[in-house]
Length: 124
Image (cartoon, rainbow, N blue to C red; front, side, top):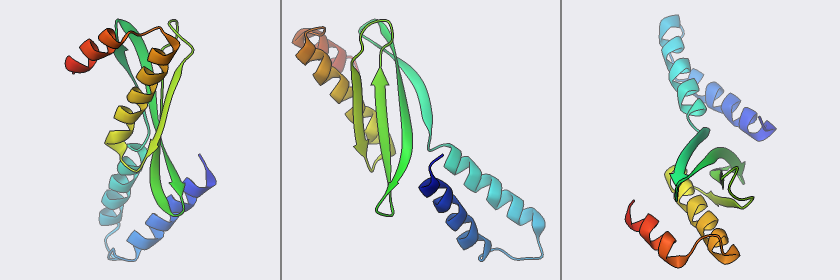
């Protein structure tokens, strides 16, 4: 984990701890669990089927200039070495941008035709 992410997590913990009552330890545990769940949910490793090929993608948070960004990567092992990549402020939008980058690179390399890309996009 990058130092900037660790620092951000620590700062969130320090800032939220001052808002909690000190006499209720159980309340702190609930808040800590909720914060930990939110932070862990920032990372995604999953797969999708693209034109009959199983492809993998990952989303990783990144802090740049004190703002949260998401870096996405998509690759299809066993089919091509092309990698789609994107970076956005939107966690949900980064997968779309990453897939678009992958399709653009696949089209430019000739392994995907315009018609195949159009059919796949219309099925989503």
